[in-house]
Length: 242
Ligand SMILES: C[S@@+](CC[C@H](N)C(=O)[O-])C[C@H]1O[C@@H](n2cnc3c(N)ncnc32)[C@H](O)[C@@H]1O
Image (cartoon, rainbow, N blue to C red; front, side, top):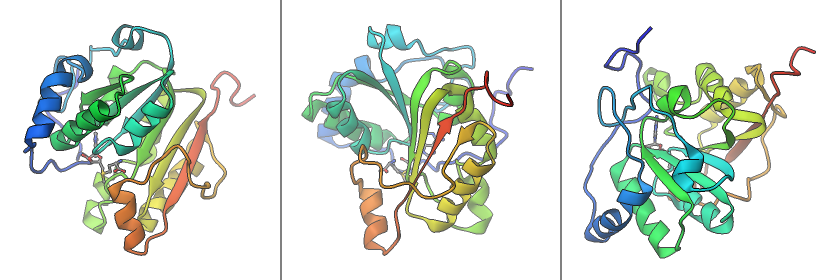
C-alpha cells in the first residue's frame, strides 16, 4: 500500500526557531552542498520519498562502518566521534535547522569530513531510506523527553520504534541510548527488555565513553538528574529461535 502524502502519526519533534547566525550561514554555504544529503521529499520538508535509498558507498566514496545518530542536535557528540574515528562513516538525522547549521560549523572547525547530515524525520529513514542490516551503531542520545503524560505518545523510543531500529541495525550491531529523564529511561529499559530483536542487560550501562557531554546532558546533570545509558545488541535473525 502506498504511504499517504501526509502524516497520520504524531511526530517526536516540535520545530521552533529556524534562524541561523552569520557564522552558521557561512558554514552552510560552504558545506551543505557536499555534506547535507539531497533527496526527493514526499509530504513536507522533513519527509523523504519512500522510494529513495541511501547508498553509503556512493555518498562517502568508500566502504566503512556506519554509525547513525538520530536527533544529533548541535552535533556535539557526532562531530567529536567522527573526529576520533576517521575510518567510520557517520550519518546525522536531524530536523532542527539551527542544530544542523551548528553541526556544519563544528565540522568545519574540527576539519571533519566523514559525516553526512539528512534533514529528515528519522523514523522515515528507518522505514525506507536505510537498507536492511546496514547500520553498525544506532545512537539516540537525549531524545526529547515529552514530560507531560498527554505528550508521551510523541516519545521516539517505543516498541514500534525498536522494530524500526531492528530493521536497519545489522546482527551484532549496537543500539545505544541515553537520557536524563528517569521516566523515559524506565520506558527505554522496558522497550529493550521486550524487544524480540535486541539483547540487553536489563540494567543501566556504564556511561558510553564515545559520547561527549552535550548541553542537554549538562542541563540534566545540573538539574540533579541521573544520566542513564542503555544499549541493545541486535540479535541475528538467522539464529533466533534455534
Ligand atoms: C533534546 S535534543 C538532544 C540533541 C542531542 N542528541 C544532544 O544530546 O545534545 C533532541 C533532538 O532530536 C531531534 N529530533 C526529535 N525527533 C526527531 C526525529 N523524529 N527525527 C530527527 N530528529 C529528531 C530534535 O530536533 C532535537 O534536536
